[in-house]
Length: 373
Image (tube, rainbow, N blue to C red; front, side, top):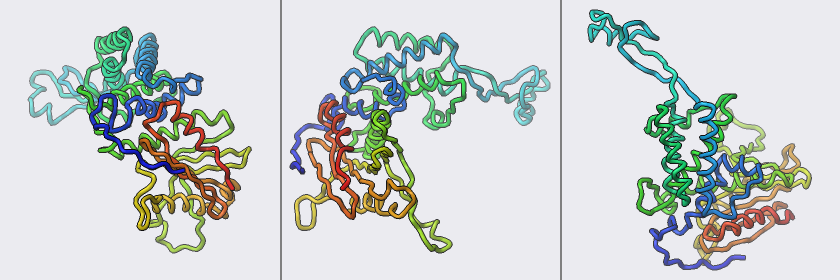
């Protein structure tokens, strides 16, 4: 079924929207894409039914996790420091010591590591507390977050937000389980504050202007949703799975130039002998054709076809009858068509991101229920 595209006169700066996508639905996608959803989802906590309450829920989780950490002391780490000392500590900075003639004053320039709680991790959580306090609707919860942020500052955590590189290189040890949950909540709290064009201190371009951000969010959201919801029904979910070409004879340099194949999501149900290869795109599913008004994008069709047919003849029996799903987001547009090509069912469908959250959830569930032959 292909429903005609609907015209929209909605301004890009309409309050409560980013582009033409309701902010509440972007919050929903961010929740699905987050590590936190994988944890609270498996705890049977249902949050999708009330996307407007997601910021309050995340703030509640973040505040609880922070309070738990404060009861057991914040994690500390080492940082590089420099100082002019009367005794040697760490390594001596000979150049600085000589340049400032420190020995004549009984001092020496040293570089050393010192233990501190002013770590990128704690500064990241502090930033999240400050930001989410301005997003939540409950005054008491906002006050709770600000109070915890002030506690961090009194303990010595600076208000300098860590860089993206500092956050990405942070590694968790065996004793950092509580921190992992807290940081997951902090990441989502910061993300929730970004998708808005209302006046404020945080800015992010709309998905219409920043396709890369929106595409990655949509891809991670689909994978995250299925990863939480489907395993209880016997499904196994793989995000970013690498597919291998069924190659025969090859020249020495072909491995250097042969493109790799990496799927967005693969769903396996061993009991039902089913495999669904999902490819997500953040563009319109149809475009204007040579001889007709609407046509599927040929490049996308070739891509999902290659994913399916390139795996035939291998050792995995699920590949022999695998299905493909090309899943596009839309605004007021409905496409849902299926075709069987050489024994492989391929479904082309849209998910309306302007629909209610419950509709989006049900649509994602409906996507995996289609015949293979």
